[in-house]
Image (cartoon, rainbow over all chains, first blue to last red; front, top):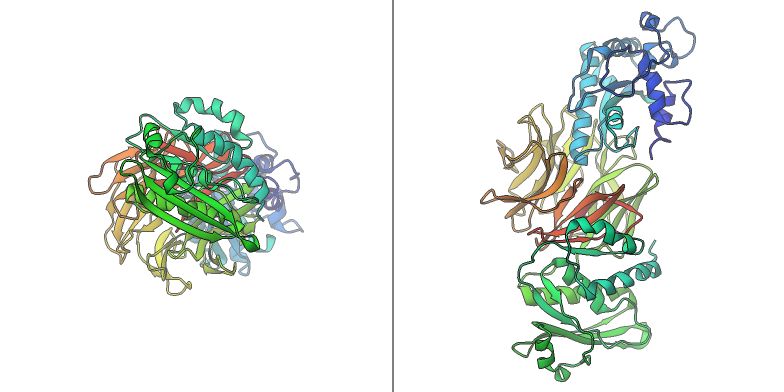
Length: 184
Length: 441
């Protein structure tokens, strides 16, 4: 149902995002974060290369660095294991890139949107999603990002990127998205 | 908004079916049985296992007036009684329908096994009104238990039937009926969400709010005049309060972070809500106008789904402070929470019965989420349903049934279950996805 809605957000991060829905976009989205994170079940080889990590700040590009597919700033999703709220190490470079951007642009504001799979109570899932959003917010705060530049919110199970009832879909939806306010 | 002709169309055939035969079969057969009815079925009732002693009632069709609405009052009221699981509707076929108490041949009804008989008539009045007169008679004592008359408009037809059912229920069980109460729920069609208020039998739905984003957790104010709910229309969860009289609404909790899980205090002046403005999901009290947030729970864990006991002194809520989501209680003024659920690793969504005796909640066992009931004094628990994706339990105003959401196939549906788990009824119609129900006054 929400596949039409989600690409609006995802498209901000991806020049190649079509109307085929969030899942496909996410495959590309995650490629730059390396080959770790085998828990998600939507792994592909992706389009990234190891050289991406070397251009973390992306400041050699002329456009909005947050939209440069070669920049870690274009990576916006942090995935979580089942029943887990721990930001995995594979996302550290990406989070560092966003922290660097936010510290260099004090008027930038980011919303961290936590999500869960569909199983269980909607209100409890809302709190679980908040915990995932909060985990990313804290990781950014530790890196020196001001609280005033961040808001952690939860969509719980209300905005699934993948609406299938499969383990792969559940993994896709256990996620925090990094969304800049001016990109809404 | 209301398509009454449609509703009548899909109510009638099912109701006739229902009155003639209370369905007795194991749940496994349901899938097969639903198929022929599902397209039009507005209500289905299952009776599981041997029901306890039931009161037998003969609902004699009232003498009809020309132009009266349908279905018949006795059908609507009979559906109500049937859904409670506490009544057996006696077959009234073949008998000469009496209209006044003097015409009742008690021997006939005793022969049919009826404990009570309901008779009445509808008469057309000037100005499109109807006079409804009915009597409830005790077959054994051959006495009149109740007799009422109403002057109503056609639009009051269903409400009158529910009032009749309430009177019969109260006279025969000694417990107030809840058939005139309302429910709220969220209907999803495509990408559209509609917050709806309907009669307690799921009929007569009115849409009170539409959105392209999700809506969850509606809760009636104690006087039934307002709804609070959580809307995602602002790209984050925000708690709104809406008048059911004029539709006016306002945000009552829109703090930084997420705002959710509203619960009315019994006095209707304050609410418990869950805010994340200080980091973790924690329970706060706010005034009904949204002012004066005061934090109640403290800790780095999840505290959510607060609900008040009827006396307003205690809050039950869900917390993962012990490592898995479990239900706890604490004084509404704050203090040390005490754990209430112990079986299993996932117990959420507490609801407290109006008499304060029972806790209904969702428990997960073997990957299945079911409605469970705990008698608070003894701690005894039982699972009321055998469906696997149950959510959002809430008690009837008279405490005799639990309304909940579950899933059949790919579709969210609403159901009620009696406290003994033996009678389950489906409320929502086929073809729409219904969820997040709550039973109101």
